[in-house]
Length: 132
Image 1 (cartoon, rainbow, N blue to C red):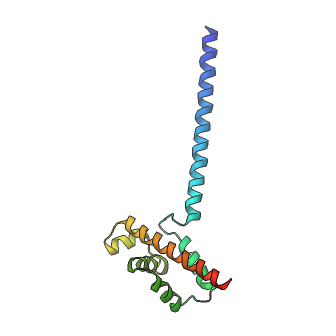
Image 2 (cartoon, one colour; image 1 turned 135 degrees about the vertical axis):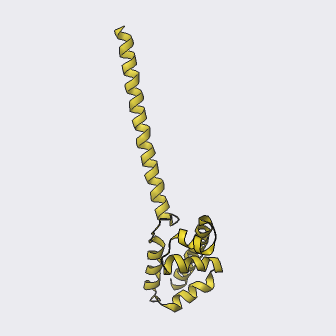
């Protein structure tokens, strides 16, 4: 009988260790995923300032933090992409607020932002190549 109890206890301890190891691995993967989303710039929070800070830094670095800068940005974007820049970055509105104001889904506003960021990254990269 003692052999049976030792067997059961041993296997339950092994199961417990495996379970804890899996949970730790899930947490580690979740942290990595979250970090990748933050670095990618596609992570939306209610009051996210990641994109605002990046664009503000680019504008300040180029000495163009005024209306001429935004006019240059506007001519490179579609109407919907410009709406995202105007509301999300300039007016500091959340994605939810923009969606409600424009009468579209939150996912639509996110896609506007994703496309706008892609175009703006491309423009910044081109500018860096020209000045190099």
